[in-house]
Image 1 (cartoon, helix red, strand yellow):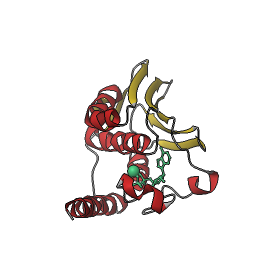
Image 2 (cartoon, rainbow, N blue to C red):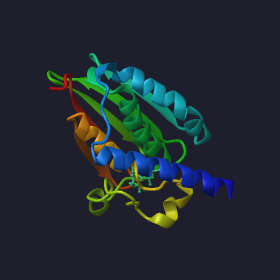
Image 3 (cartoon, protein in one colour):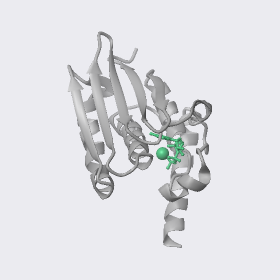
Image 4 (cartoon, helix red, strand yellow):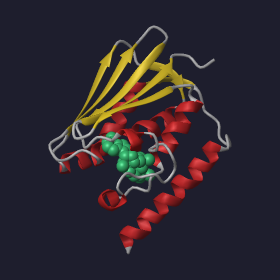
Length: 182
Ligand code: ATP
Ligand code: MG
């Protein structure tokens, strides 16, 4: 019962947040943010979950990962993506967060060695409540709102969001953030 009520609370919190974001009833508090710092914070939060599955999470930075954005919201994006990467990767797998500076953008890649997503599901995973194979993913405790939230927060940051995946091999979510918000 406790587990279910915990889940329900998370669901309600996520739904309220998502509807605020969808209706643009929220503001980004823009500042200079180091994505490397955000990634390290997210990794620290998820370390015990990863350890339980004997997984390692690594952060790799090439150039500067400083962008203009909302640190709380960026952290929410990274936590949602890395939580998924850990949840949908079998034990002993690996998750890498890569931050690559380009001329006008900073790329954030969340790479896992997990179960992957087929091309039909790939078209739908950003919809609210969409989950691939509900029965199997039920014990991972999710509700299907994480990526919908990521998508809207990425849009709010004018970031391009892309997913590349191969079933049984792994998945990479990529976000390309402009260095400065116009
Ligand atoms: P929550 O609301 O707790 O995040 P969730 O993880 O099920 O629940 P999303 O994060 O929106 O919801 O993801 C939607 C679905 O996309 C997942 O249920 C899963 O089937 C699939 N998925 C997401 N990330 C990955 C990944 N890295 N590898 C494989 N499948 C994934
Ligand atoms: Mg999720």
